Length: 554
Image (cartoon, rainbow, N blue to C red; front, side, top):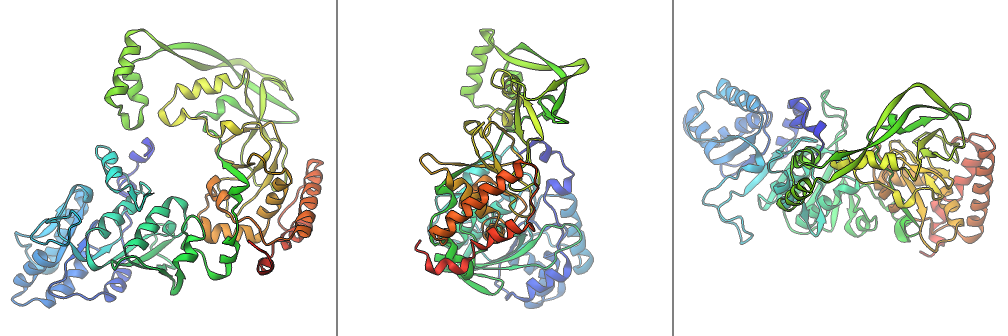
């Protein structure tokens, strides 16, 4: 969890997106409520779900209005809200509509992850003991909110793994896990949540967990509200034991088809399933990110007319190692007792850390390229096939200034992403894009985190690099990527590895695609710029037509 995320406006901090009343009504109309139904709303806000629930439930009890309200709040409706202002507003709205709030109710002001409803209900032997189990959990859990730093690691231990897989540390994911485990057998969960649930690899564990616990129906919302442009879905889950089918937008998808994708994607369909019947690109190439410097302006220079301007000189100095300094740089400002003791010992011995500072020159130094102190830097761009380097990075003595700067920074800067692949030949693409925009990466580059890369695994023939580059230029490849593997605008290195390898392309067309790709790179290195509309790129894409898949043997 980044420091910046913890200092957002309270609305974004809590991940709050208020649910429109028309959508609430639609969801509630699809439920059955009886005088015995126990309903949980784990983040009820100002009462978007609570008030309509009460409107329906009071009609199912006997007595005068005050008695019916008291029964509904004591026996049926349970809820938690973290935002104190919204909590008070919800209680006020209840009183405005129904009259004085009864002394006993189950609407709690607090953190859902710190609270358990308890009573006399005992269901099975799964360790829940007297925790209340619910017939229905409904709501709009916080999306992208922050966890309480004091219990963040505790929550990760409690909810961060199911079915042997990682559950992403995301508010709505942990809400789903806890709520599912608070359902009675046969209980139902109705949540409005981010459509990132459908395909992204980091939600693989959550998808597996849901399929192992019950029947999943999921429906995309054409729109949610003016508060957010995030695409949203309705998750309709019934806790009924392991399921062999997921129903998406009314269409059933067999679990065996879903599991062919590797990331257990709910974006797969029968038409694209054939592509996943063979190996993946990851069996031929390894994907890698690059490094985050933290201050690109210190070390990265744009190339203009074959030269750069260097505005800095770099000075090394020794900084004393102190416990106070290490705590300031540590994740969540925390260090284990063992780490603290080691740092105290180093501090007592007077140990130091090598650091670097960028000192402005009186006037920038013009450096003609190539120069031994600078390496090409693989910053993202939208070109395909090939692009000449647009930036270099100061890399004197193997990048000692950059690496010293990173090691003396905060915890999240200290790793050097992609370092084993620095200066290797491969292919690369922009991290943020609506489709794959691949280009050939010659040897010699230092890698940036904004442009992931792929590199041949040991023993794989070099021609495979050009065949896979040709494949990633095809419309079918981007369609599979965005429909099945990760439909968001991020294209991670692991997404690249999960792409199906085009096993259906026979030997002759494969050789032809490799020759065409090599020729296109030669043309691009001589100055030609290709687009997806270029005749050569269009023709190359036809080689990967999935209609040939039935002829191929996986």
